[in-house]
Length: 224
Image 1 (cartoon, rainbow, N blue to C red):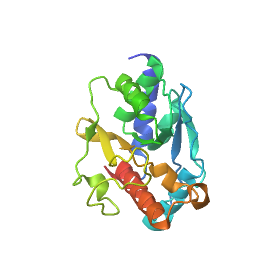
Image 2: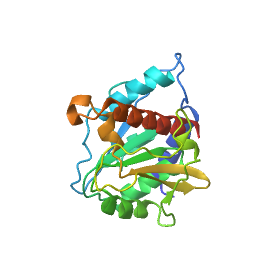
Image 3: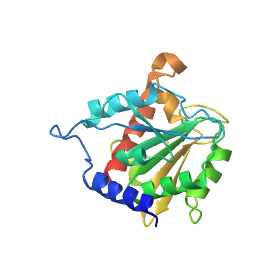
Image 4: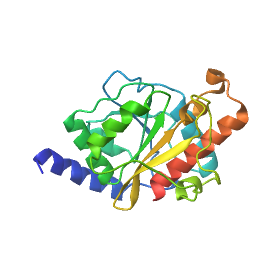
């Protein structure tokens, strides 16, 4: 392991041993983070999604998130400042070997990545994540998994928010040493459901489903 990786690992240990799980008013606010990546895909899609999710979690779970999210490059040391990183987009995703190694170390060190296919991302994000964990495969999580029952109960698993290709919504995980380190929501588009209502004109019941599932993912990321 080179000196940079040693420094990153030490930083990760300090950050994650000191990270909070559910709100503590004595601690400063936390931020959700959005992953910036190369390849031409629109990583910046759904700009109102994370602020709305943070507000929902603060209101319903009594968390202490800042409403303004952070943007972190996949290859940056700054990614280790955040316990929860969200990734979205419609198109191409490219990780360099160094970026893939950095993301791998982040996830192995206790970080959590939520990938939300905003439609058209699937054929690109799977090979990119294979660079990060060549030895792992995405596995569909059963409806009984904790992520569907952490804050709100989803007996049928991931809710369907947008039609897209009219396939059933599926939730996949990458599991490292028994821990789900990455959750991939496919064929649902939770992020669109988190956006301001006038952006997509989703029915309120669908927006609430999306926000509740988002709260489940956030709570799972911090508690498991």
